Structure formats: structure tokens, C-alpha cells
Length: 227
Image (tube, rainbow, N blue to C red; front, side, top):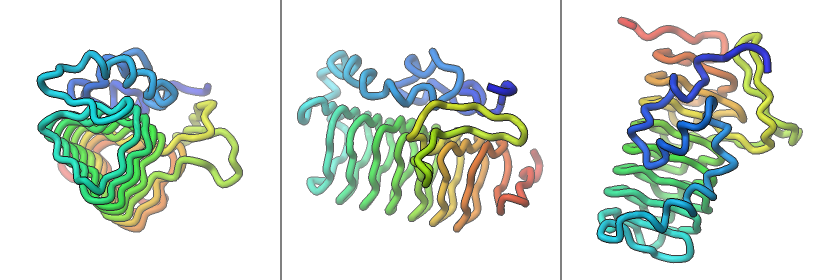
């Protein structure tokens, strides 16, 4: 590891009060360190959830009674769907996923090994794999996380001259709270988007993008006005 990469730390990206996985994430410095243990965490807390608020829909699938789940959605455990979440028509959840309170998983959206914080929107044709999406983050239609490098080598997080070797072959993107990803954008393996940052549509993003920024392209990342 070279450098501290402060802006990629959990404490700089997320309000841990906005997810059922807050206590789990607190034990790590960087969010990608949590990816390997999501399934085990779900299995540990699923049986402890309030039976007055949650039903067990299938093997290792716990869903809040107040959640709206389309009959055409495909759900695989281990999985937690928190209160007031909405799983729409033909959503595909492959397992090892937490869907936060009030979040929306939309038509033809595919999730795999993710922590989706509360009030997140992945509503239209999104692929989110091996990723963590912060509170009130939003992925525009067709935007995806690419979670495996084309040469299949291990993912390295890069921020200028700083690098952190993750030891992970599969690592999509870490989106900070209130991040906005434009339509049909691709977040390459090891991408970290800071809180309150907007990414232009049709972008190809990699590395660590600062908080409170607008990503226009790799050579034009500007601070938001008034920040």
C-alpha cells in the first residue's frame, strides 16, 4: 500500500446510520474490504430480524413486510430487503445483497454481492456487482459497474500517484452518499466516487473521483460551484 488515500475511506464516503450494515462496515477502513464478508453478515443477522417486520420468503431470503416485490422478480439468497424497498418487474438479485430501506431496484436491474444503502435508486437496466452504493446515491438508466478487469488481474485502486492493492479479482465501484451516475456510464473495476459527486452521462470512469465534484471526462473533473 502506498499512501493513505483518505478520500476512499469508509468514514469519508458513508453515513453508516443509513444502512442495516452499519455495524458491519465500521470494522473496516476501506469499503472494498467488506465485500468478501457480505454473505456471512446477512446469514448472521437475518435470523435476528424482527419477525413482526420481516418475513422469510425462501432459503436465506429475509424481506420486510412493507417492501414491494414484483412477482416477476428473481430473488436468490443470502438476501435482505429492508423496509419500504421496492423490487420491480424482472429485477434479478443473484445473492449476497442487502437492499436498504426505501431503495428501488428496477426493471432488468441485476445485483450481486452488494450493500445498497437506504434510499438508493438503481431503477433502469443497471448491473451492480461487488459494489457498495451509499445513501441516496443514484445510477441513471443503463449505467453499470464493471467488476472484473479484462485481463482478469487483481484490482488496484488508484488515486493519482497513490495505489492500494485490494487482492480482489472482483470489485465494482464504491459510490459515496448522494453520488449521481449519468445514464449509460461504465464504472470500471476499482472505481470510487466521492459523496455528492455527479458523473456525466456516457462516461467511462476509473480511479478515485473527489467528493463534491462534476466528472465530465478523465481530463475534466471540476469542483461544484459554491463548494
